[in-house]
Length: 168
Image (tube, rainbow, N blue to C red; front, side, top):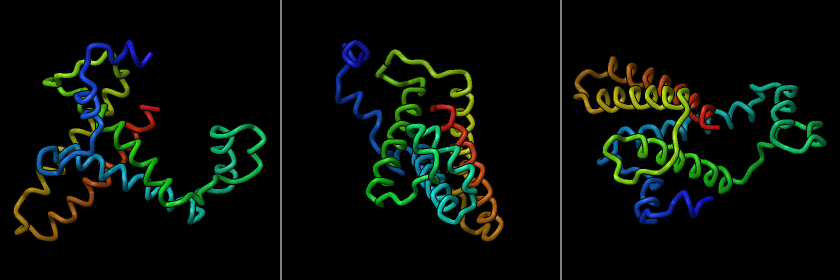
């Protein structure tokens, strides 16, 4: 249904919806994409460090692959290029969702977020705006600001993960 979905839209305008954000022009979206990087890295480290037990890994595998693959743990030995590719796809999706939700968006596509997705997007954007504002503060606040930025980054990561799960 791509032809009917994109009918009447300039493909260059649609493609621009998924491009990586520039930190200077879209600081909130840039922070959201950085958050996704951290979430993926943390998930990978959790599996590699055996923070997720083997039984849960097998259960996750049973959802991801054919039923005969449930007898082995989650596959984490992916090439770095594969991880980068997967992360780039998720970033593109987050950029698309963020940009199409903007009220001044000139490309109006026929899709609608669920109420849960919308709520999660608003939470991510709110945390991203808070973090952008705090990060732009004067460095004179020192350690207090650094601690607040770390806490806000962690909260953004949690909200980003929630958004990604709701998009699935």
